[in-house]
Image (cartoon, rainbow, N blue to C red; front, side):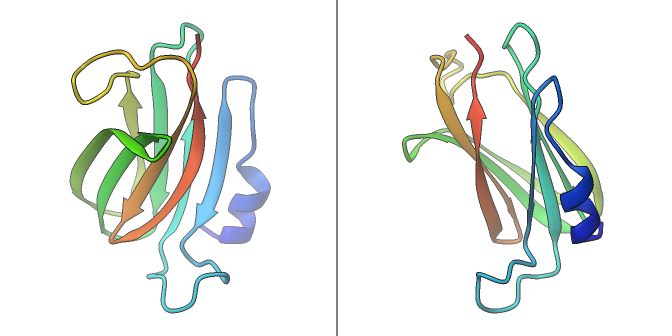
Amino acid sequence: MNTKEAEMFITANATGTVLYFSSNRTDIPGYQGNLDVYAAIVPNILGQVNFISWQQTKTAMVEITVSSDKEIVRSVSLGEFGAGRYTLDWDGQDVNKQRVPPGTYSYEVKLNGISDTKGILMMK
């Protein structure tokens, strides 16, 4: 995915917020691995599921962590994924299978050690 095209075409819509970030960042020194990633949070009407979607341009080990105030709520190591677009359905539950309270949470999508964090707004 071309970064400039992604920045132009991945936008917010009526069902949720779509966020774009890239590992080819100029504000981080050193080689970033040429992994372009975008992430989407699309809460459903009932607020029971949040979809964390990403796209990667090459094979990478994928880890996703959801946090609240720097405390890990849930973490999943998904293993190695090839280039493509993927989605993880987060049911709003913590590691103990308890529903988290409404509020703002953050998620981290990590590909081969390259990560970025964006906010998630849980529905009431």
